[in-house]
Image (cartoon, rainbow, N blue to C red; front, side, top):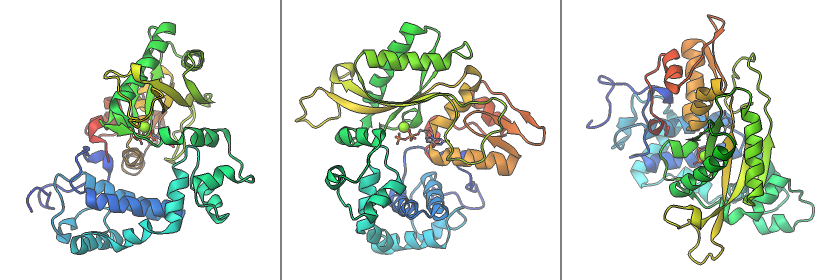
Length: 372
Ligand code: DGT
Ligand code: MG
């Protein structure tokens, strides 16, 4: 059993926050299959089943080597009868018939197409599907379909937004935000988070955290940044959410709940000149000289920076398991705002991510090892 941990040496934890998961994934053939199955379960509103497939994919991503036979899955957590059957299928036929069936299913294909539009979730996609709509053209030309502002932007910039953002583009966006912030608040900081902080080469959007040392000024700063970007004429879409943060509220039990910090979901115009090597990831035939990029900015108060950074760095699976580990193994509640120790009835403060891992009694996991 070369390269794979056997039960006698080291066991693989059921929690992603106790595993180191880099972007090297020797089990991509299996994890891609699980991710299709998870997405399909999400489309069918089978949350539990979706989570089971996501957990199985996450465990395989953390392994140092490829599975060589079905027997290699023995002793691994989160792999049940259904996921093992998929692994077996892939070993025997080179592919999973269950996955192939889903991929060629009209409903799955349509749901995938519709949910690829910014602002369209599975509920809306299903509603359109049940009305008999099958293409994006049909949606925009159907008079009875009402699109909200976010979805209108999603259709307007569809080609750009569905094109992956490169690391060079993400850094260029960061420079624009930093310059804007510096002009107004020289002590404020702009920190990269999300998938690019985990070392990804491409992402679906760019995520930055803004924070100021002076508590209580972060919300105003974010609003002024938005104003300034607007004045520069590069804002194509803006959705602002003001703070609903309450320092006395206990951390949220549910993972999916969004945090309460002031934040904005933007679409910005990124010009080729802003990129270090001057090349945008656009069609070679594209003569506009710019592309639209999705940008999220969140502005936590300084004393919550570490929690926000940890919460926004992802991956989603890593975040889920951090919270689950805190609750089930430590009797603590963790979210993007705070860590609360139930037995001590106390909030545990943190200046850095290391402090949070320390409170949880976890070894520190670097951002690039959180690709669970
Ligand atoms: P990407 O952008 O697709 O390359 O990958 P990420 O990991 O940057 O994902 P993204 O941008 O959707 O979200 C950034 C992180 O923010 C994500 O890893 C976890 C966190 N996050 C996103 N959405 C939610 C949410 O609804 N609730 C909570 N609690 N956290 C979220
Ligand atoms: Mg992101």
